[in-house]
Length: 151
Image (cartoon, rainbow, N blue to C red; front, side):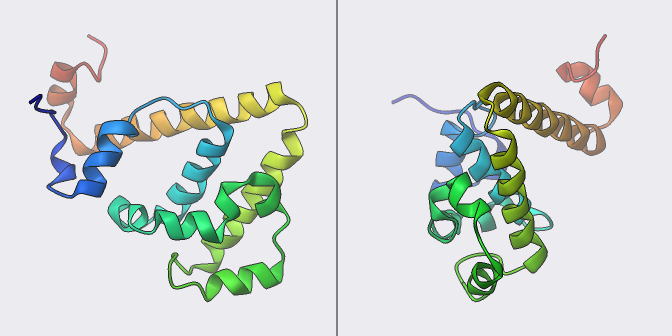
């Protein structure tokens, strides 16, 4: 049996381990999957990632399978419906942000190259945020040793 070397934050949680092994740190170019992560990471702000992972399927249902076109058409009635959904984080600003992001993406997705460029930049920004987190978390000497700082 092959032993997988996992980060400590996975603990023994099977959901966390599955996410770690198949998604975390893996570049993604799929628009629908990137939109899913945009919604989920927006909902995660101020919370633990496992909290969101445990609600992922409820988010999938609540946000029409993460279909940008459908979410972009959400109305104030949909916001009210989502605010009553106990399966997701019921924060009005996070819900409205997800809908607003869908509208912006839909507006620019008429040109596939523009859409790819937007998502490409989101991926880069996401990676920079991870690096920023690592810089705060680990002292400079440790970052130097692990290659996070150029020698």
